[in-house]
Length: 229
Length: 229
Image (tube, rainbow over all chains, first blue to last red; front, side, top):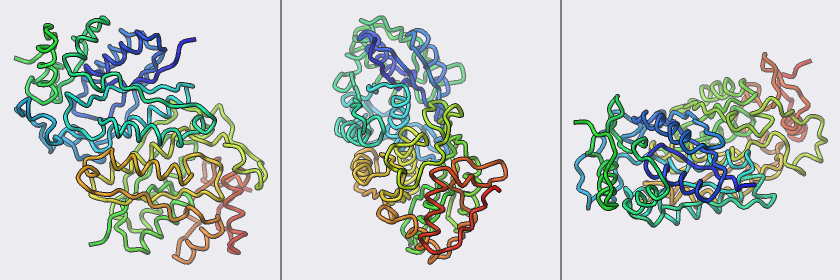
């Protein structure tokens, strides 16, 4: 029997690559997409397409309205998405797209999902190199979450060891894309932009677009992202 | 200016007492109730009544459908609520009412709420004495969560110290009730039963009812809980 893996799947480039890596390592994939009422509703459609194309065992889309808390350009329409930050300045300050405690909420939900499905592994596409300076993408955070998770659950007290698997942690965006392409990922169905229009076209200017664009240049691969004119 | 406190308020006896303690210590209370689509929908009504009676600054009721994961008698109608467990056996085994990773999910959401409201304190009514054996009520778990929370947030990296405050941790149910009564809590509006009927009347037989009933006996106080005949 294959090992079961819970995968936090946003429908973006990173989590899609994580899904491909897990499949290539013969995991039975249980994908979890959190619809947190973010600006980018196209992400949810992308996640569904990715889940279908990867033939996952189960895909749960869980709605949770983080706009009730707000505090981020992704969950409060009064806060603007940062645009035109130069590539070398991305990651220096924590940007307005930081969603308070997002990865903690997502990993907690993944932990609940893992416990009910008999899975020990939670895979997440965090990245400590080409990232936006989010505190909840750092290895020390991931380790602290894993220690807490072990104490949090019935399965943990009964001897199951939960592992948070972060295959992208030390890869550049270019390396992530090369890895995905080598595994046959079709990046045209993924969405990364924080400011997609209603046709799902990317802005090309937000920090997420800039990192993604530069990744394709670095990987020496054509960028299949649909940008708006 | 008063210290701000996020309080996880279920509408039960414990979290209501926590709310009263925070008010008595002059906190500005921001109450968070998670409507996780549990059996006990009356809890949500009770939480709203408690929030009103305690004059909290803000009360957010956040829906999140944990039935998508299931795995507990509270979130899967195919699993029965344990009844007629004797008082001395409560807490020996983890019961069917255990909801996978529930406190981790709730504390994560409270952490997001705290970060957006500029609060450092998260109050939760966990209890390591008269409890049901849930792993996520133990002090070592709470400490691990606090360590993780510090690394998880922008506010944490900027120097805010998040504290998880557990005023009931080492109290018996009787002591909790005495404490609440001394602070003027009206326990008739709270709900604890895992198997309330559609009029909000308690069963008197589930583990939660048994612990609560015995608490009033121990406190030497009349039990104002509305039980069904």
